[in-house]
Image 1 (spheres, rainbow, N blue to C red):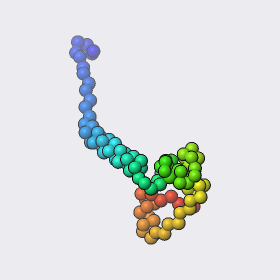
Image 2: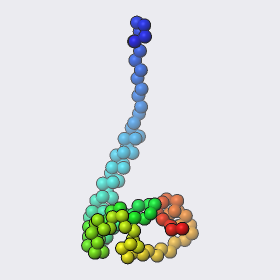
Image 3: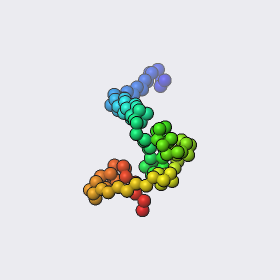
Image 4: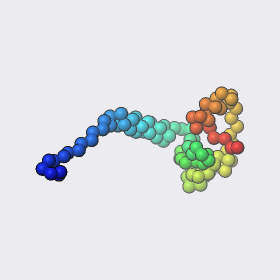
Amino acid sequence: MLGKQRIILLAIEDITERKQLEDLLMDSEKRYRRLFETASDGIVFLEQREGKITHAKSGHREDLGYTKKELIGSKLQDIGIYLIVVISKRQFKIWRRAALLITAM
């Protein structure tokens, strides 16, 4: 209180857009989790930087003969999977820019 006057400071921020984006993200996560858990194919998720396995679908673990603990943190080549991908230079640039492609230099 300054002298005999009271001062009230009020700050208001519209978080509508942020809440909408959070809801969209939660819906997207639910869809991908459902896809991952119900797919009949083997699925592994790789981290972007080093290409290490972060998640592996349970059926896929049995197909490969590795436990979840053995798979998580491994690279595909560590478990005997080698990928040869042929793409155009244009597609390479698009995938690289979108962080969908990891290259070893």
